[in-house]
Image 1 (cartoon, rainbow, N blue to C red):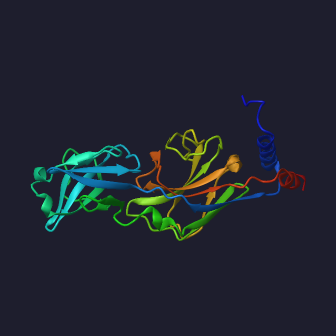
Image 2: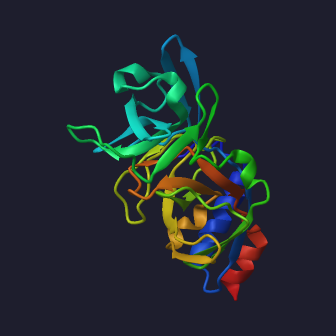
Image 3: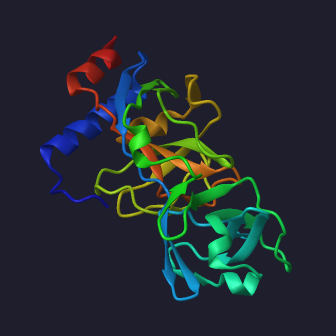
Length: 274
């Protein structure tokens, strides 16, 4: 049961949304999307004859997949060992039959969880970089690459359209996805896990309930979604970076964010009376 101590502004916004749901005239709501980049990153450092590999902001893996660290040498690639997101991994080149001097760079890839280690890396390169240095998302993509990105969200009746420009291309195996945040109780995007729902929605978090609208197969082209009138309550929009394997948990890796403009109470009432 909602508290009777809700602020006047909250009550006014709720009244506007209730009028919206009954209105025969569509009321447009918009959001300006600006960069909010959080991308996978990592580092590697030497520890005697071993290499310590650490990762940050790597999205949780779905069951049946794992991360593996590879050494790239002049003669090919050699798997060094597993990496658990968020936990340091210690790998020893000698165990793989090579020396530190032979390694040109390191790869961290997504691989299927099988009883045997693969002999070649997959095309899904999460991190790449030199030994003893920075590991970069896909080997090329940094947070600064999102600086020029701009976009907009337009909600009209039970439809939403997302238009974006100057978003950098993602590494193989990843896509952009659109989420609407319903509750403004919190400020942080947070980490979410999926639950069943008509819109592929996700469960509640300290930042509120988020609903997945869907992926953006080509972010250069405006994408429309059927959202249903319940999503008139949307307060924020997030563009996230997700794996092509599907959404098992909402990624903490984000590209863009914007607050959805609430309609003025008078504007909603006018549309209702027409």
